[in-house]
Image (cartoon, rainbow, N blue to C red):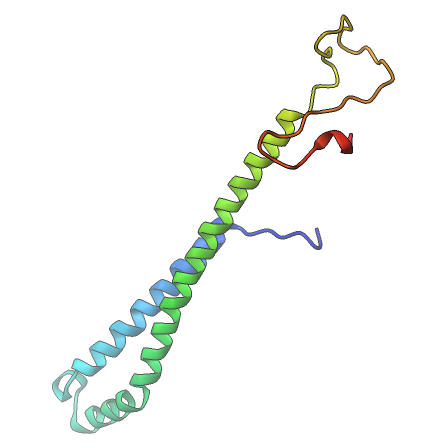
Length: 138
């Protein structure tokens, strides 16, 4: 279906969860590395290499983790707004559908039974509180 917009809420939730976990794990790994010393790593050379790595990459890892956390917040808002809009659209379509008379039912004030065709198009009433007049379209 080209041109259609569709958001798989469940898959989107999976993406949010994955990114949130990644941000948490990056922060935790950075903190563990900062707390490590030579007795944890196994030797003075390895400790110096880890400290050098930590010093060079700490800021970048923190920025990636912060950006990922902000992305999670934005994606959560997007998912929630999309779900709300879907609900509002469904309610609006149901409201419009309820304003359109059943073509098989008799019009009020007539003796015509179901299936009777007077040759005249049926006209619906405008939605209460709206400037939308469905009568002009039917």
